[in-house]
Image (cartoon, rainbow, N blue to C red; front, side):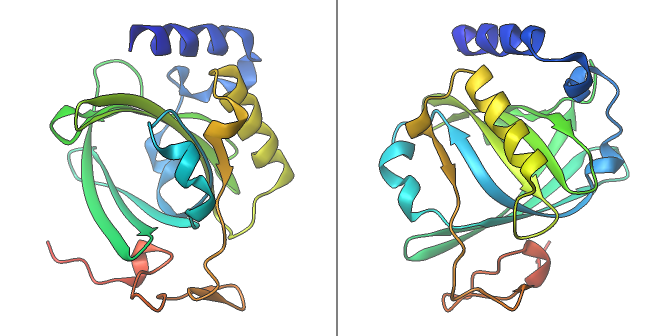
Length: 198
């Protein structure tokens, strides 16, 4: 885990200053709203073997009255739909969020223009496995060239190999004419499409 964090630090030092939004200037309100997750780089053990089956995911980010981030996600997994909600607490330094009890050790924005795309880094520890991910968030169901380029730079800069990177597929059952809709398995593309019981 220390090796991953050291690699991340070295990558940040080597990237241009303008791209390092997460170094303390981020206002989390800029991240709020609905996003599509269009590309992922992951160090998770089985990611390379499963990446061809992964579909576009949906994320909705809101801010609680306590200034915690609430992240609702919709992830279509083979025969199931994983709808989840997690609340992330702000760490002491900068706009970095965490919830160790849920396995989220770090959640931060690496770079963004906040209109079209955001590059999000997450450090996780789930079921005894520690790994990190870099995700390309997009306001639209297609990726802008600038977003893809920045995603590739961060992924490679953080040491992800090509087999650890994937552009997610469009779930043709769940999307038509540019509108997010529930799939045949009732898994919505965007979490705003489902009713959340709290």
